[in-house]
Image (cartoon, rainbow, N blue to C red; front, side, top):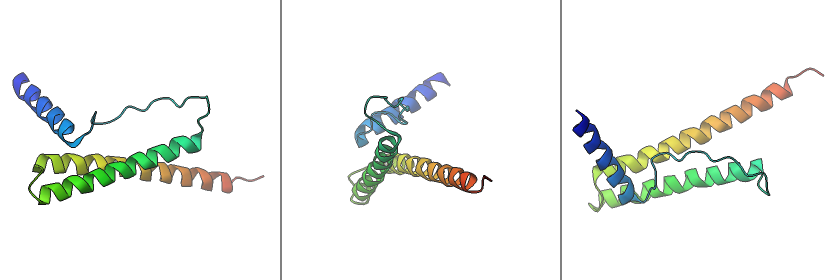
Length: 106
């Protein structure tokens, strides 16, 4: 059983390296207090999600042309989907916080 899991992990890492990703899910790094702001962090995460979407499109096109495997396409689309879900969840939380503040009684 261990060899099957090891084989799966090795295949996953190989697929990630083929599509240019460094890690399956980047760990969030703490925002540095020097010069970076909340808006800069939000902007960079949105740009990261947009880049993953563009990469997924490119890998999908390569898959249609027969230049990329089905696994590569599925992995790229999955990464883009996770990034988009994260952005949408953040947006929903921000809207909920705004509505909560807006409905506070003074």
